[in-house]
Each structure stands twice: as C-alpha cells, then as structure tokens.
Image 1 (cartoon, rainbow, N blue to C red):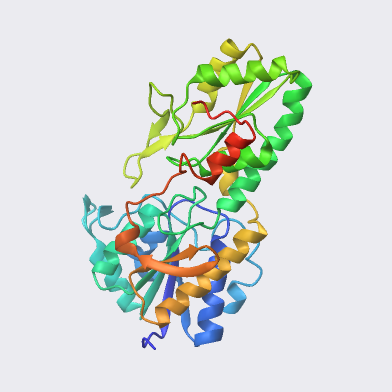
Image 2: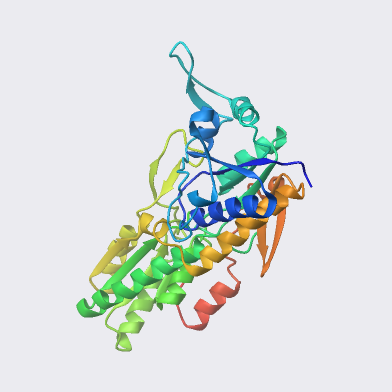
Length: 366
C-alpha cells in the first residue's frame, strides 16, 4: 500500500453530468474499502489556492443521494490556472504569475496525501504540472465532448447525446408541421462526436462536423432531393466547430484569462440563413448550448462515473500516481498524464460513426 491516509477530490472546468457520481464513488470507495479520510476542494484550482476555507470534509452522508444530481457539489471554475494566476498581494496590488507552490503547501497543511482531479484537457494539464511538482495525483477524464485521448468514452457524453437526441425528436414535429428545415447546433468544440451521434440517434437528414469540412450547396441539394421524394421537412445537426471547405469556424467570443479562451458558437444561424436561400424551405436554427451539460445523468453515465471514481482511488492506493483513468472497450485502465495532454481525439472520417451515417444516406456535406 502507498501509505495514504487522507485524499482530496476536486472538480474543475465546465460542469458535466456525472461529476457527482464520480465524487460519490471516490468517497465511498476511500472510506468503506480503505478507511481513508476524504476532503473536497471547492471551486477547482481556485479553492486549492485559497486553502482551508475551501477545504471541506466529505463523509458518507455528504454523498448520499447525489448520484442522480447534475452539476457538482464541489462547484467548479474554468478560469483558474495556478501556474498563470491573477492574484492580489497583501498591499492590494494585482499580479499575475505562478502560485502553484501555494497550492502544494495548502495540501501539506491540510494533511492531504494525494489528490483525485476530475476534469478535461485544461484541468488535467494543471494536474500534470502538479504531478511534476511531486503531488500524488490521479486524473479522471470528464467532458461531454468525448474528445480526450487515451480513453474510449468520457462520462457526460452519453447524457449530452441523449439531451440532443430528445431535442431533435421534439423539433421534428415542428419541422414537419410547418414544412421547414430546422438546424440544431450542438456542442463539441473541435470534435463532432455529439453531432454525429445525436444525428444518427435522431434520424437527421444531415450532420456537419469539424472533421469533414462541408459544402453548403451539397447540403442544400440533399434537402431538395428529399423534397422531390415527398419529404416536406429537414433536420440538420451541426457541431459548433463545423466549418465550410473554404472557410473557418464561427467564434462567438474570446474569454480573457481562460485556459481555453475561444468560445465557438453561431454556426447554426449561419447555416440556417444559407439553407433557406438555397434549399427553398423556410429555415429555423435552435442552439442547444448548455442544456447539454446540465440535468440528470443517464444510467450509462452514472455507471461509468462510478467505475472511474472507484478505480481512481484504487490507483492511488497502488501508487500509480501521475496517470489518468481510461476506458478501453469494457476494461478500465490508465495512461500517463504526460501522454494524455494535448492529444485530443476526433471523429475518424472513415470510422464507424461516419460509415453508419453514410449507410443510411445521411448527408455529411462532402
């Protein structure tokens, strides 16, 4: 065993269905299997910097009933990188710099021997950096986008796809009733997993993803061909990071002091305007946005989150520090944080998602 007696757990980055299920599994495994103390660190890395006031003990009663709850009971922040942090000194002067040593010292003061960090690429990059400073860390992959390398599936993805599919199902009735094209914009950043999966599940006519640059004329032609066969409406799912063959992604805004400052969004409205002109059907756009990140996690996400959380504690106790829990088929494994960072995965243009879409004659814009 590793000599660990007290562990910390924190969530950082965007909220995601299943976070509470991971926290619950960490706490229950740590206490009931290994007789450990567990401390929750609120507000992500900001809480690690602020120290004691953000450190809360977690017992079995604290995690009772949270498996079905969305969000995170530990709260989150997606702007606080302690290796490049804006802080105010004792004289009230604002500075920006590396304050990671403060975080390390706060862990020592609290007697925390090891840390479970739940997050996506930005969060796990900082986890990697703290691991380099000697902190005993295990990462748990979290993102609805399903774009983290080394793991087949991230928790939150299944819920996001279910939310998007439900929306597509509801929008179909409006599209058909009014003989319209409806464009549904979904999240995913630079990967099209949510878009292609929800388009397949929802029976969409077209899916536009970042991995396959589209020609809007091809999409319009597909809609016209369907009309000629008697279909009076169309459903087009578009990933927020989709881009035309001769252009770039649509950026909604730039967020200063964020590890990932680019915020995508707005491509749905652009495509809706183009398709109304080219395809001859009245067109509307629906942007699902943060609805995909909220709400009750699906059964699959609850199970996956529980497996991830329990395995993260087991890895800590086995001394496998500096790694991220992964899913390989049905088997849990791990990969080094050094290897995971900066290797985001994407939909393979010749992979099974795309092959299934082409098999059912779904237009991909190419």
